[in-house]
Length: 262
Ligand SMILES: CCCCCCCCCCCCCC(=O)SCCNC(=O)CCNC(=O)[C@H](O)C(C)(C)COP(=O)(O)OP(=O)(O)OC[C@H]1O[C@@H](n2cnc3c(N)ncnc32)[C@H](O)[C@@H]1OP(=O)(O)O
Image (cartoon, rainbow, N blue to C red; front, side, top):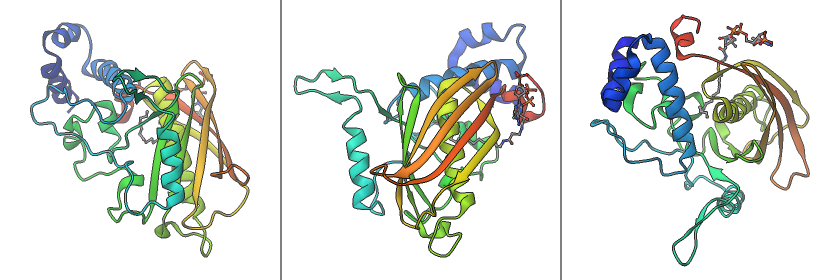
């Protein structure tokens, strides 16, 4: 399988990759190539680049675009952050903003390949946990904005009715899921391919179903392969604290997911 994917990546990038293949195992090649794609795809603000050389790829859908299930509060916070992202000025020049909106796909591997459908080769029916319910607004509606300079991100999250735990309130596991996703996205953005090694959560106040909350995540520190992230979940006006968390992500080579250690 790894050889097959490496060949696919090779055909994407032609001679350069084939030269790079000499003396490098498919594991190592994938690891480097996917890391490079991960960084470059995350550097790209929505919409994702359409310049893929892969003949069968299509534009991957960004699931964090506004939809009719978004409450006015969710839409307002989204618009406020969009206003802080890069904009086109009247004379057509790009003006840099401190924030950028990250796209959100329904397979994590699409981040690594900028939408190339390698995901069809690996568990074609698999879907990202947070994006596997088609009914808009029923589970996780969220959008992540990242501030590269400040090494932090903010997720605007609207918790749907299928996430119930305590009556009328969001399940602790669902809160853990979205925290893992947001802190993991920041860690991946900063450090490349990672996996969650540790997640500590303090639930401070119950979160009503339908709430719109902000998930603030920031880099604490990076030590060798370890990326430490802090996280705080608040109301949109930040007056109410719902949850606090810390997370540790460990950098992996792609071979790690196929049982080899690199
Ligand atoms: C931008 C993002 C794009 C992607 C977006 C997609 C959206 C979705 C995002 C979704 C995100 C969701 C993501 C998910 O949900 S990932 C799914 C949940 N996580 C897992 O299944 C991970 C399972 N565990 C493992 O695979 C390995 O144990 C890992 C990879 C974690 C470590 O591997 P390994 O064991 O081989 O590591 P090492 O020996 O090289 O050690 C390296 C260093 O790490 C330290 N260490 C290790 N473990 C721990 C620990 N538990 N506490 C404290 N420290 C720990 C260790 O002491 C050493 O430190 P030092 O000696 O250097 O000081």
